[in-house]
Length: 205
Ligand code: TMP
Image 1: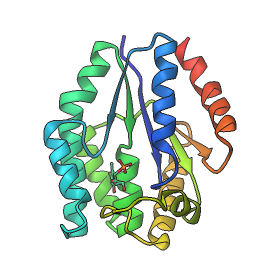
Image 2: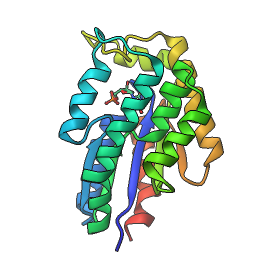
Image 3: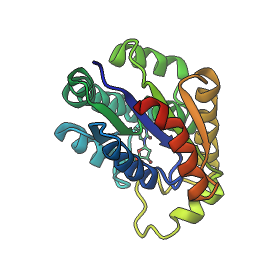
């Protein structure tokens, strides 16, 4: 049986990492074998590309940034995601292609049509089975991330950048509302966990 591919998305500070750790435990409790991974990264080459992409002292053209995201993704699909799904494992991935549309497309201004071409090239018709979009106002994201001492190349961006990123995510959610579930990341952790349980329990049957 083919495993399920689940991705988590949201602006920086939306609490993805906390929810991802909780979901990994939830899966383990339900006897679901899940590979937990992230983008950019997840492979040895991908992690090297991630270091370049997040380095605030490494300027790059906006399209270079988009191409490197997809290069890391190509490797990730080949080495980690597709083998795991084929084995029947689930894949729980911290960010995937929706992030490129939101950050490089809406945030930086790369033409969405170009990103659609790259998406088609790198992943064909493959899409996550489910995407959880943790939606949060940029000001709240910044407040939560406020304690980060040395912000990376993305974290150092201003609220207007994250406002565009948020809009990009919501646009993707409107375009693929069956796949992308929008979760109010400003709600209490108890409420969010209840919602996650309601979404996940039927999938784990
Ligand atoms: P993380 O902090 O959630 O691990 O993600 C690293 C950063 O990379 C985050 O600021 C968002 C950014 N990113 C993009 O800009 N485009 C992408 O396609 C991905 C996967 C991440």
